[in-house]
Length: 115
Ligand SMILES: [Zn+2]
Image (tube, rainbow, N blue to C red; front, side, top):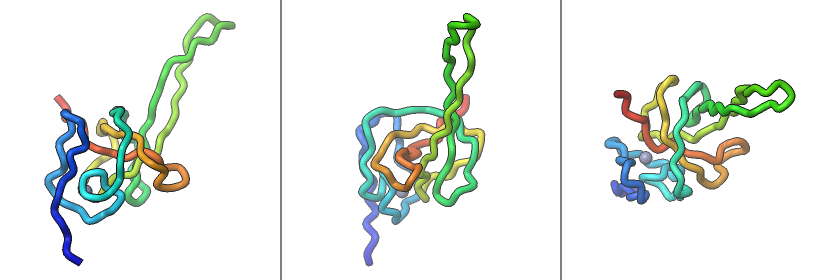
């Protein structure tokens, strides 16, 4: 099969498609995966699964009884396309997509540049 080297424009002005091409159909740049039009950012905590990663989100929830805030964390599993090289600790820009696996409905788009 002939591989077509086309990069899709996702419509996000901040997102640059990766340099290396890939042949995965679950890639938003080189495959057929469509993403929802809202970018999110979170810190990657694990890349132990194949083609996947885990980000941690934390927010403050007010507890009226103690008149204080407690920190609540949630973890979200992301699909990481083959053309993206990521490491735990990096800030990942990601977006929602269709369910790709039982727990995966988000896809990583870019590694946030550290300044
Ligand atoms: Zn790709």
